[in-house]
Structures are given as structure tokens and as C-alpha cells.
Length: 79
Image 1 (cartoon, rainbow, N blue to C red):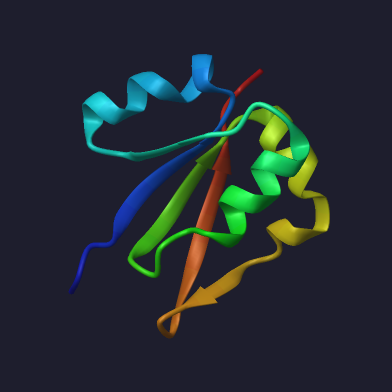
Image 2 (tube, rainbow, N blue to C red):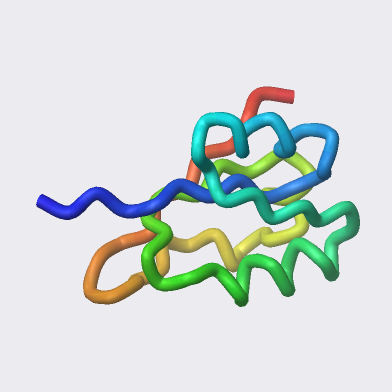
């Protein structure tokens, strides 16, 4: 079984520390930046940790997407 990468997407102040755990950090401080970062996620990312503001910015785009034949999972940080 291949283990994919974890990414963290949202406000820099909320996601920066996750880089220490090996996550790919995509800092995005406004809704348009969140949507651009979401669209640019690399194929090897299987789990995306979102801040509540990032999840709100993505809205319906959070429906499960398929990456290289696998579903990309998402989770939202607590407020």
C-alpha cells in the first residue's frame, strides 16, 4: 500500500506549524488564494487538512475528488 502526502491549506498562522510534521503547507489568506491552492494540489496528496475559513472558501468544491485513481480525503481543523 502506498502512503500519499498530507497537505495543509489555509491561513498561514494556522497551517505553518504543520510543516514540522512533514505536511505540504499551502498558505492562503483569502478565498481566491484558497481556490488557487486547491486547484494546484499535486497528484501525490491524499489528505488535505483545511482551516475552517479555507473549507468555507471552497464550499461545494470540497466534494471528494479523485487523484491518480484514489479519493482525496479532507478534514477541517476545529475553529
